[in-house]
Image 1 (cartoon, rainbow, N blue to C red):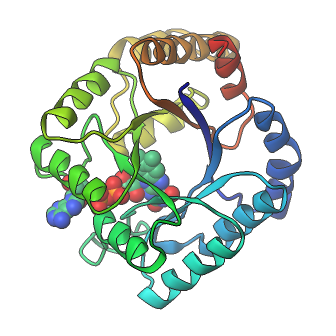
Image 2 (cartoon, rainbow, N blue to C red):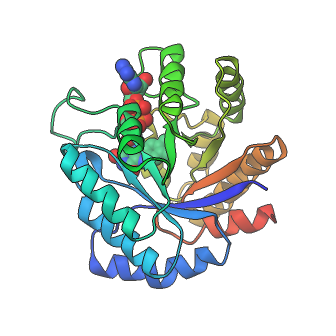
Length: 275
Ligand code: FAD
């Protein structure tokens, strides 16, 4: 049975947090996810708010995987955070290099995800199931396709248990990627990251930065709808449902939804799949 998981980002306001916990979470929990995850701001900028959402979910006895990166923090801070997560019953983490917050220079001081995975294993043994990030369309800063693949293997060999991909709309990029992973000896699950289409202008901008391609036919179709938000919404649900169906029929080990803290369209896509 493929795992379904839902990703949140920590809301900036108290009202946003209340809505996430009181409205969004019960609605998404009804879809029976394997776990929720909560992102970690670039450079550790949401350390406290990520922790706050994670502990509130744990208080509700929900399985939750905090995302984590060294960011600008030292080993003591990360060790302490790991300890506090452990004490509250967290069993899963998403370990990342992350990025520097914009305006804070290049990536030179960032700690690679493989080093964070080793650090977590060194200090907490096998307590946590560790997820890492994977890029079927290749990480935007990667030197080459092959080197990025090799560094994914390095993260998994350092002790990560599975990977979650950046979102993609070209399903072939994922299957080709799985083949290439298998060819270099990666045999751990690589779960497909799914980005429902909500705000298309934001999605297009974000996709340019993170190196995820939105196929021309999708852009053209959405542009053609103009301001007809209902048609865009329905088209987005249809396209992403079809993508998920193809992935599941072809044996993807799981789907990780970037919910953008919204109930819809994740709920509708999930229901369309009828798992
Ligand atoms: P790494 O695996 O460390 O790789 C980063 C780059 O360095 C790649 O180009 C890789 O090829 C290269 N590289 C790796 N190891 C080496 C090495 N030893 N020597 C030389 N080059 C190397 N960002 C956030 O800020 N917060 C989040 O919560 C967050 N969650 C995410 C969740 C998922 C599922 C995904 C797919 C991405 C997420 N991101 C998040 C984005 C991610 O932080 C960025 O893509 C970041 O630029 C790379 O992080 P990474 O862990 O993939 O890095």
